[in-house]
Length: 207
Image 1: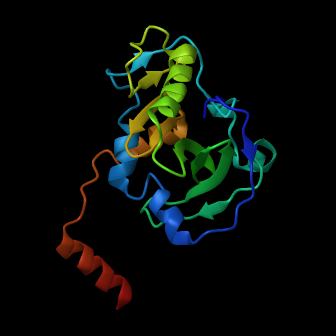
Image 2: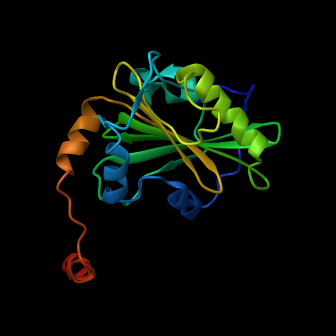
């Protein structure tokens, strides 16, 4: 995440697992493929600067360093995504009236994806959103139109920052590393099972 604010990491009460399942941005292989489709996309805007997540180079993010780099996670989710070895570490950060929900995702303890959800107690104001957008433009994309809302930026190493505006504003980071390339190749031909096939698979596992 861009460090636009002097943030304070807080230990929050451990909320229910269902909440973090909903917040997980890669719940299915289809969602994984959507994320990975941004790698090497001709629609990406090139940046001369390396992307940073919480002031860390993406290739430096490792499971063994998470506590030292980010503190104790708010929740560790092992989702039923169909992706073997998939884990999501969640962190909550507050800065004045704004809140940030961070998720750092690994497969077999190898980092490949991170995201920050920017929100507040009420709807995110246009002013707050513009503050975030201005920092992206100033740091990575100085030629962007000031009215640009969504970005897909590629750094010299092929790492990606892309954004998504909904009720909340999301910043998403993909590491252009071996695990991302392996996942993209492994699931490129994935076809979602029909409802009948899903029921058969479930019955096969139960009986």
